[in-house]
Length: 513
Image (tube, rainbow, N blue to C red; front, side, top):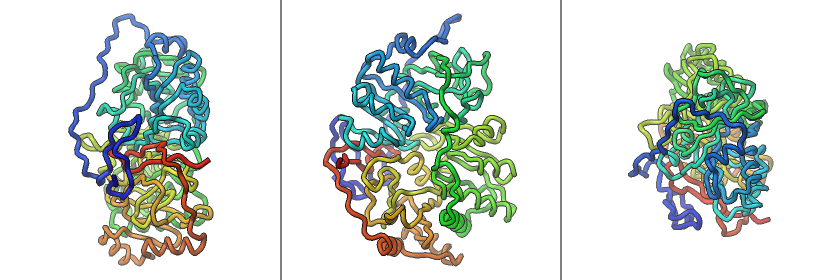
């Protein structure tokens, strides 16, 4: 069957079940109840502190076929996922599902565990590095589920993703299991993506390298949801939080695109008291916050809040009084970590609060604008941030589709060419974010406005901005770099791309080796 973005979607997928096809960003209405976690008790004198991960595995006990979850707030500096899965392998466990909020380069050891049968399923919002290459080549019999950052807590809360044991890397913990991510040598900032896991998993294990006197303060995840605390030598390297995708670009073309994007937002009439914004991963996207700050200062305007993955640039705006509050689900650099620890106007939230479509109102719904990147975008304004030019998985939605759905104006910033490949194409290889939620594309060769937003097109024209039809951008890119070759894949599905509501917006097929 075909879904509403014209993608061939199977009615049923082996090892997944019946498929609900994507039929529009706001069409799927929930009809289920929120799930309840198992009831627990802790008697006076009970001790949660255990000597090792092996002891935790034995006490629970962790068994074959269980789902183990992890958060990624240490990003490429995380040690805990590898530590836990090595323990599982040592104890001879098999057929485990890894439900990690993101999987990065540092998690390459997962490949060996997939080959050996320790890990047979993956559920995540982002898949990169060697693990992504292995999945694309067909290492797993069961398709990976790629969810958005809002879709993941939705799936946990609604019972679609059932977690047996959540392992939470905490930079500080007390012996009763109160946790945070802002204290200690391995501080990573907000623990927002671990909060649903802590609330709904059958068992919750805190892994820390910084055990402090009871009671810990501040508390991000309370003792009421934590069963065991394990002290290890090191949970990770906070320097790994920062990557090429979380640094502001220094490329002159990227900076020019970012400056133009800020002018687009200004022309849309959004920069006024109470203005709210988010900038996504990617150097040009993050640079937009810098230019918005200059506009706020020049106009004497104070923004209401900044949202999402937080950087030092946003922290600087908060400290200057140009933004009233930061709402933080994930820190993108160490400035953000320090700010969350010290500034009461820098507020920590959960992934559900951030972006779940199935609650009484998530934060992305209050966004005036979001600025996002794209691996490729097609003439229908559909965006791909899952697969690369070779068809191999190289990322995931993260908060891309969530923020695009919630914001009044969604802006994509992208160079016309990625290397020697056109960014604008007839049809993206993998649809991550539907075109109905994308409003404007900003490139160094001009601005394309979605035909659904004639109001924005008029505003951009009135402001004298360089408008161009998106098909003209595609043709210009092809005149420079040629028409890209068609990717050849096999029939076998290696990943399902869920939209934030749980419907399937696209699939990823096995790549040719």
